[in-house]
Image (cartoon, rainbow, N blue to C red; front, side, top):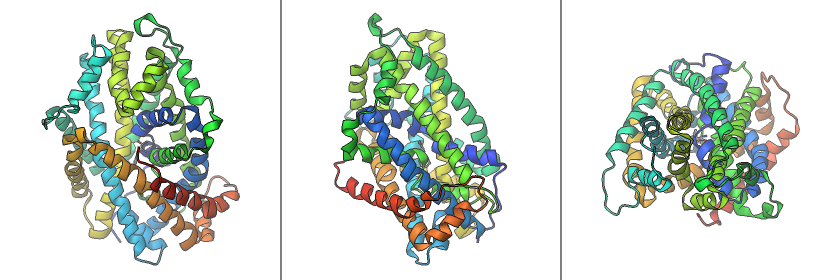
Length: 469
Ligand code: PHE
């Protein structure tokens, strides 16, 4: 047992920190792009179904596992899983969870560091007067894309290091003074900026070369259900993948935050509050900014084309250009808001990726918080360097595929079996409901026992047989 005596400062702080972990770059950059790539309206129904039958049950499972492990003084996935199953194998699956977090952090923090740099460039007016190709070219040269030589991208490296120093610093302050405070400042600002940008997004009327595109086209595109596509397995896999990534389930992150919840305190309602807050940000703000602003300005065909070229870039290659069409001052301001929104979304997520590793060093070796936080920063720096240096060669996408997609399903499948079948659904159900401030409908017991593991198995097998791109 570790000497770790940390705890959350308040229930609101805990919920905001959990919501901060869930609300991330995935909500603003990944969700809209997944939706467009999977046919717009075809995506929404599978997405919501996956939220209800995979997302919500996994949230309860993970919060319950974490709080259960915390009773025994454990704060990291290997130890938490170990207390629930008798076989040593579970401990190693927990170790796998730690690595997933670190591997995701390795490319995620790099992306997060772009937002810092773009905040600055927006304020400096770097994008003012450039056309869309110019802004896109700036991005390509920033990440060293499209050059055949192996140049060293100095500026991205500097911002990557600054970003990791910030993460390390906040982690080293501990949960209540670090993580919770960042979430309490960052989340409200994020929502405020998001509402402003969404309002602008839904009211832009002036288009490129004087053309007028109705920006509601963007929303309709995402929100008009396409029933014909309901049977397409790739759409379902993409929807399940997005649910995992956005809720930060299937990687052992939530367990480590929940391990600091007192056994007497509710988790059922807290888990729902954080989960639904994430969905609000994702489906309301996440679908009202990137795509509507882009479609309102460029028209649906251009945007679909751009998204197909590489969705991630849209927020960096297109939006800064569009903002400056609103004038220099508003452009700088909107750019600053957009990238700080992304930065807050990013850092509250990457901080949570550090806790499984830090908790493990404390549980297993009694490390102090500061050196543990520093070691996280260093590992992410080393593992992240390939994504910085070889961005050109698709390393980033490889990380996202293996760490950010496949391993989540594998981990979730194992933990749902552990929870419902090894630990036992009756005990598990009691754990979820202990201290609960809401009454969870009993049919969820059935869902957790049968439906969730079956669906996870189906998603896993399905992904083996579905081509990567
Ligand atoms: N949920 C975060 C997002 O949507 C990503 C994340 C992954 C957070 C892993 C924590 C752990 O961007």
